[in-house]
Length: 252
Length: 222
Length: 39
Image (cartoon, rainbow over all chains, first blue to last red; front, side, top):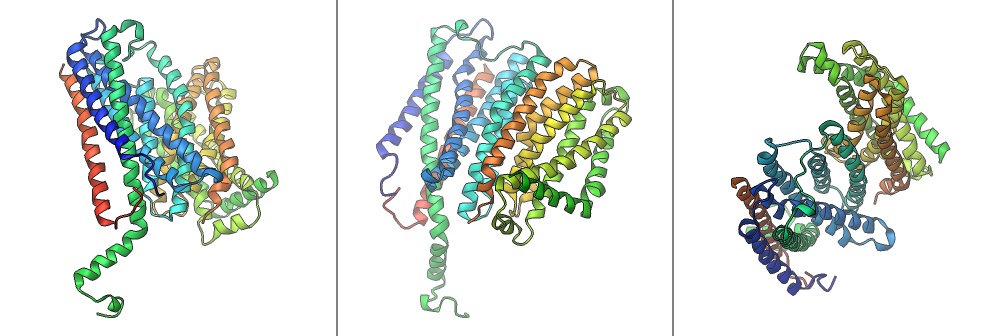
């Protein structure tokens, strides 16, 4: 690759935009938005929880797409594998945040830290699926073997998600009847709330994109390090020990 | 493809018959799990009876882990994978064969566990057709997904710990649906169970299809 | 309201820390590797 896939100015603006919009979202959430009738102040969590939940799925979606592209022989490039890994890690962070913010939101509203709500349960499973995938990525194996297996693992996991959703939704309606939804349907939200939600989505979305790009770059560097790193380490040792290079390998 | 599948299934089952791991180790383990559940929960039978369906399927899940581990361990002997690839067998057939062997072992274990649950937990399986259908569909799905992951983790040093981490989350909807279906069967309302059979069916179809298509890719190693 | 503050802080602090980790790792790798013309 001779040209960086994403020019510096783009990432810079993404980063700045992320900070800017997130700040705006926080301001909206804390001061401009008022409490709602149904949930009082807690609906302010609209600004963070739905966006992080959405981007967790986006993260996994990118991983799945990149994995498919890697597996198809015609489009196979190492870059797709790297992107899959990067997106998965960022996704896992967002997924974890979803679970935490969901729990924090649930505690005052439902009175419990955790409830087997269909959405939260599905997110918890998503988290577990992601973790398995990331564990697989760290397994020592030849690069090609690992990339291919990870790609297939990502697809196996992704196929599970819709099944998961149906199962947990039917399961929830069976056992809880109609539960209080954390997310109120739009008609209950006034303009301030909708704007706050939108700002949250934009701010966190830009943050997500920025993080994926940065993580992707690190992934590329890691890949290079894997290849060249060993040689460099040997060089460093040679320099440290002041062993002239023509004597490397000879008994000291 | 089907002929290759039968060949591979036969081979795996013969290996199993000779080594008797399923009968000597996994079956006792399965029954032990049922007993341990009884220790963990109130010895008062009502609790066990209520939870029976779920406990049964958790036990089945554990057994499926072991069965899949065995199935992939068989292939990780020196060069066995290469031999499999070079033998000219259709990879889709290999997949179906291995999955079928795992499924067969699982079904036997499920029968055993079912008897265990009826006896130990005092459960009446009122609607047998639902019970059977659930077991069949769930087993196919578990065997397919398990064989895929088994092959994925094969040859890796961390296989034993990685496989559960990979397989269990994927198997979660099977656990959920099968438990619900069994509960409907035990309660005597088989009609409630049909939606869960649908999920199990979809799961089975998805993973069998995926395996048939992608197993060749898995067997290919640099 | 404490819950709201908690929710907001967890989100942004975690993301900021993660961003820091990624950027630092990138810098460390770039230092360890010879300069290349692809980024």
